[in-house]
Length: 371
Image 1 (cartoon, rainbow, N blue to C red):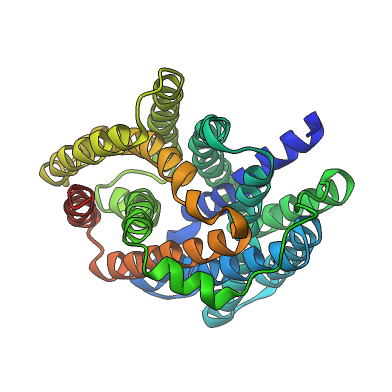
Image 2: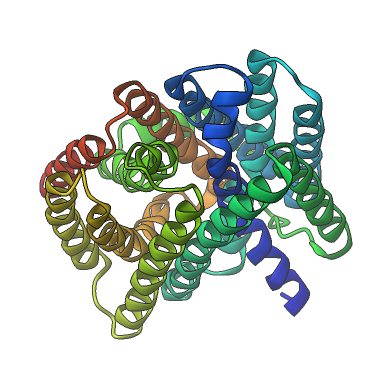
């Protein structure tokens, strides 16, 4: 794999989180511009992940059927079309449709990149690769929130959609120039339903799916509700960009700790269990500090736990499905992104950030201890 391809994969891996957190700072502006409630504006995030889930299964299956390269090109084209449409809409329902089209395309950054990595690496090398992935996933929200806040402040919310169009077109051109085909030549076509049935009977995989959804819900419920929470506390939206830096730093520290532990051969299961326990303690702290800016301190610890746990779960969750990496990864993604979308829908309805964090942490600890 060439250096250019590695850099491209890093950019593609960061793509979904950057474009989503780039969008988060404009939620209050959307609420005002389209004359909808805060809960309705927050639902754009939950519907986004519902569509993202179906993008995961679509592109993952096509990665196995058509090949990795052509699937990336198709998906990035879909995203660019959705972003262009979003530039011109004046109706909130139309905006929701555009966002769902964008989500469908953005899903390739998750499933496609992981599939290519699993083509190139296996075993301990794959775990070390996902440790680096954790670092990139930590940096992505920092970049997205910071750039999104600056663009919204100085140019308005439509500048966000223009930035998304340009980002997608850049990645599309780079992919066409640099991404090789990595699908194994001797790979047999696999049917979707038999793999789905096998995964539904796999209790370990189902628990890990819930864990992935839970860790992501802790993170994205913050991006969904924090702009309104900060406004209610009387702070300006500029503060949101700085909180993104704090949370990103927490994720980055977690990813670096995980990388060091991986090099020291600490078992993945041990790291996940410790992260889940610390997560609950942090959620309890956040609930007690819900009316204060000090909530950001335990929130930072929660993102540290995310940076430790997620790479270890992703590295091993599909160990038993190496003959259908794209399809199995697609079905896994379908499951946890549907769960994430449902969780974000409920958190938008409740409008209670600290409560969402606490309930999710309690549920995740129960799931982890049941193994």
